[in-house]
Length: 356
Image 1 (spheres, one colour):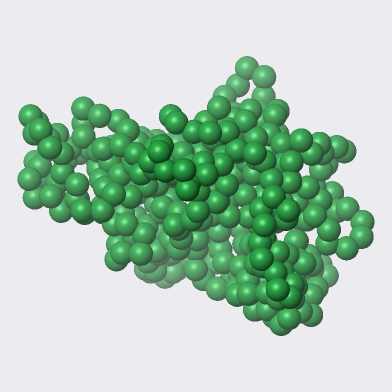
Image 2 (cartoon, helix red, strand yellow; image 1 turned 180 degrees about the vertical axis):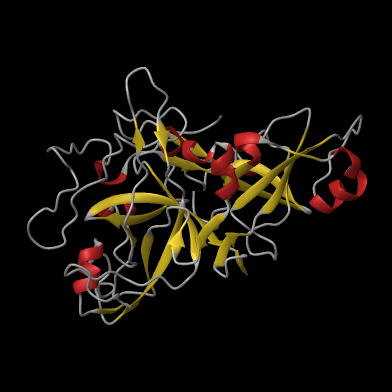
């Protein structure tokens, strides 16, 4: 894997966080409390080579794939350990059943805009974060349970329920926590009735694939989509990920776009909201994520989903592999097999086109 280590903005990997609970509310206004603590992050969200004890050592590199005649890339995340059982897999695509959330789908506050400083132009080295836009505010982080001698377990799913926030003159990056958004008069957000004196935002019924990652780790394009000789592309690891906040702490996330859903009614009369997947094929002689994957749709095309159901196919002695799902289904239909078990479903986030 050809990557160059990133020079961390805001000295993310060097800012130590102390205290019994680093996410206790700091006193004062909504200042930047530093990067989130990744000590309890699952390995998937630390990146390749990541170390939960030392932030910023990991790297996320997109996987190369095809979607029709188009070469695309996606970021691969596995199902959480809690969904890798028979019962878990049975519910892995169900978001809600009636009024009950089946998957953990925390809210994320997404802004329609903000007021930037006059004549502002973002400078990465000077600013670290873009003061011309407002970061999404999250209400949950990836967490795993680590115990000596045991395999880490976690339930984190990189899917959120969007709460739409309308700016009413709020300054960019002024708000950095759910509490501040709810209390602010400089934004408009639909709120629940008070429960034990607390109100929270009401989601707009759309779901989005936002994978929160170690903010100190670099994020890179698929190797074959980048020319090593192109000096105009600084391979810093900064530019693909987006930035947001959790309780005044800075975080990074990979935006995989909206998750398509379908609503049905079960035998008990309850509405069931389920994830619509797309198919991901790879040759039986190869491996998932090895560069020979074929996706049904690229981001922005009909049929796109950041959640993939995985299949293998056997191209036999073909010297040129197919590049579209339609070609596989037409020429190799008899050899297609659904992958079973924990790898039957994956999160396959195609990020928006960003700078490198």
